[in-house]
Image (tube, rainbow over all chains, first blue to last red; front, side, top):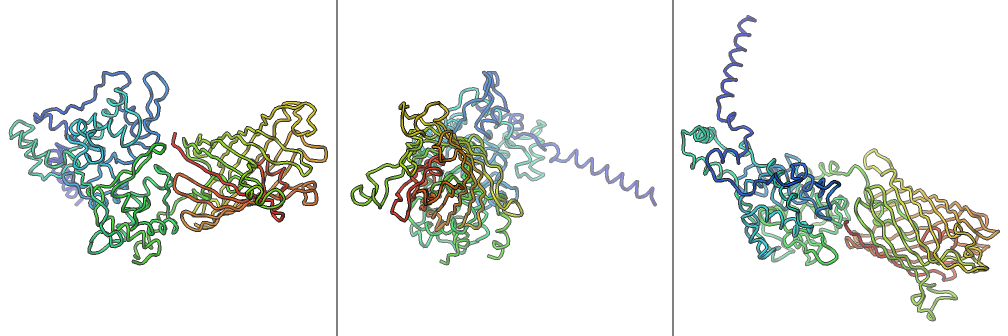
Length: 343
Length: 287
């Protein structure tokens, strides 16, 4: 009996091992999307880091992005890149969309909840090196001609973010290349893409020189966005009535408040305007929600605030792809609920 | 709705982070320290007596006089350690008219020792604050005011240290006790160099923007009695928080702004109309 069970176990383990090693998932697992595309003959992107510059390192890039500082090539520490923000104030450095081929704020919010991530205005820096288009859509309305050089150049996009979005200093060449070096460590992996076994087979065949490489490249690129869409929208015309939605979800609003609003405003992390869990705060937000003031969530959520002389910190707006009208109304419902308001 | 009600306690913070909105109440310091790399530029002003012999219409209720003026800044060296430097005009005096230190440079240090917790943590926050005051007033030989005679450099100096024990009792109410010790290097014969005191302060938050603050400081001294012309420094104020700016409008019988000034030298009496309007403007910057 024991011999039979042992033989059955060995046979099962053998076939399981065979299946794992020969399956399409195993071949592609963990591989960088950019590497696979290059192997398939895709044209290399222009934003590979120049590591010949003195001081360039992944660690320096990570330091600049996460803390604002890096070890200076001449010794000591650099000046803080921005007095007000770090990259992670507005951008995740982890995957934030369950399906990278669409920009769905509700799917992203639920993914953020499940993966303990903040829900932010900026597009994730995870996979930034795989994109070829930046400051898309309506960002021209905000930055004017400044977006033109940044639209198809990641270095220019990072520099625009450094000087305008974060209201900081421009990056030195070695800092820029270090940031790129770090970004390449958080590029998309094949595991991140939603591919069927058949599609993985198609890619594997192409990698082995037996299939259509151009079709495989196209297939891979169809599974993530090459640029993050951005649609600027106005607050509702009738702010008392709000956006027209069928119903509101208070729990969903709580997620937006905690994963988005509190990310910057809790304990004045990135803003001098403190938000917390007190009824006074919710009453203040609820009172101002339908008004035309800088404390109106409609107002600052959709238009953001602007840096002014003497007060450079500001709040970036939420595009429709980053906060839907439904989510805005859910947030309002949650705030009014916590304030004890009835509408 | 039910789900939200269940989940709300889970988002509670581990530590109470804003017992008071500002680093000062009216006269006394609060337990609050600045976040790391944050600069707080502060301007404080105390006008002349609102009423009484020196107030009223003739001085436009004290607004034409400046009892004390403070200008300076504090900086968050770490989240727990705040250092500051202020210049004050100096305003206090003894009942016989002998003036305290004038044209004073004040170096301050504040360190958060303990933070109040929300669920089972410490019931109070505990912070130390100290100031070293140096008068830069010109030395006048044979000045009959012994405090300002400055026969030695050390006579220009006074110090104060205090422990602040505070608790945010609810979203609206916070309370603070402040035992302190003040040392002046030179005092008249009948006075004491060392002086223990106890301050009590509170904040009542009316709305997100407006809060009422009040404090009183009682020196423990046989010499500092109302019969001898001394009074506890009592302040009442309104705090206006506009997010980034904090305005404070207050009334107090203390003339001096710094602890080395108002604790030993408050000789004005509220009941005689010897209280004044004052304000503080605070502006935060990231560095």
